[in-house]
Length: 346
Image 1 (cartoon, rainbow, N blue to C red):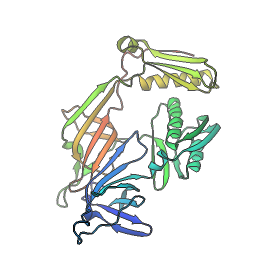
Image 2: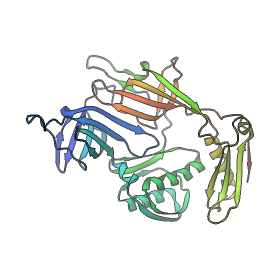
Image 3: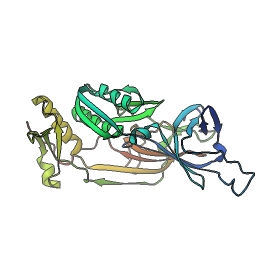
Image 4: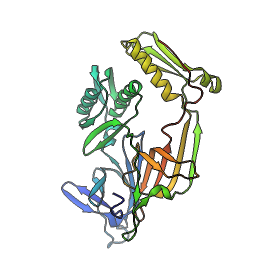
């Protein structure tokens, strides 16, 4: 943890049972973790001058090798090397990458969401870890879809029912799925052995951002699936439509939901979509390993418009001395786009 030690990230190259510390050959390492992505990407440049200097060692890094990054024994990254450039540029991704590439066939009939995800994992050849989802019933067929696409569909249905956003990551060799954290953390950084740790939000670099209506939805229609075009219900916000224009989404369901379930889904989908996206980026902030996409980070009071509890939607770790980060955050309590008098018909 950042309160106990000065960061010392070590890069371990794994070739079968042989593990080699290649940290001294690594420069400019960056790990990019985006909430919308299933996999974390790690890039760095490894010294590769062996073609010009016979005394310069090259570790023989090649695609398919495994890579681990540890900090005082604690693993912060584990993945596979995908590309190696002639200039030593290396790109690796964690094991979630496999779920974005391999295609499978999956047929579900009235399966509970947790069971649906476990069956998907079995088809994809990956272990299922903790799957914290509601028992929402899933009936759908996917042919030639990636596990990532299937998981997105399942989580969208669960989110429409519960109003929660779910995070999925491959950790310790298994897929972990669950709601986003609801308890904020205070992240600390210890810059040197003779200095105490401090709250990283005490010192920030430049802050930028934008407010956008590009993803706004102020009307939602529920339609029956299959060949039927039956409309099951609609929810809309008249005040938002008057201000921003009609921005409607159509959600296709199986059609066997009762009236209460359909009303709840409409209400949840409209509440999720009828908001102005307010995104802020913070560059050059002190690094802390516990800062991952999806967490709630407590910011100290400041005059930069990034204050209080913020949801981290993206983080880039720049490992080294010092360990620095760039963050993208948004307010988890952003208000409705306009008004709040929703009309719902089912």
